[in-house]
Image (cartoon, rainbow over all chains, first blue to last red; front, side, top):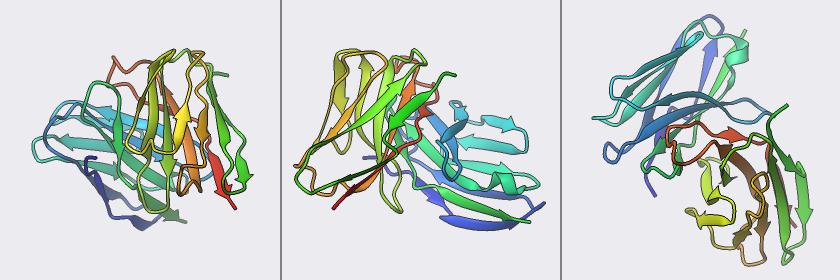
Length: 112
Length: 115
């Protein structure tokens, strides 16, 4: 089982502030890095699937970067809003069969 | 609406009983997955299926069984051999594992409590 680490485990952000957090994964046998957002009482939803070193993806106020050589990805939230409150999961794909290894998540709480 | 349904949302069972969790998808996806979530841990893969009538063990398959008789259905049975079955169970699907970069789509989950 591969080690995917997310930090911090949780963070509290004031509405309007920007924040970022990290996903670390093994730098070998890289196929893809997925980010999911999991809101309370809902199903996890995909944010990004990143495949290339140096990839940068953006969806609204949320963006992500990828460094496959050193094994990390950052997720950024610009101008946080209460609706951004969720647990953000990253998942590492190390084979072609779709077997994802998930981190434990970063719980983000945005307070008005 | 296309999506994944899991039932029931909450399930209580006595120790020693087998229980089957339902997962159905109408997304026409080839691949389906079962994950388990425990507090403070990432989702862990129990079983996955790439195609009808085929499935493989994930990282924590002991004490679980699955079947894939239909493309849209991937039920999970938690047997009495599973030593610590109380957990939150998520089902997911993706268009195909051959397209290894495809995102996974998740159901709402079933919370199983063994008394």
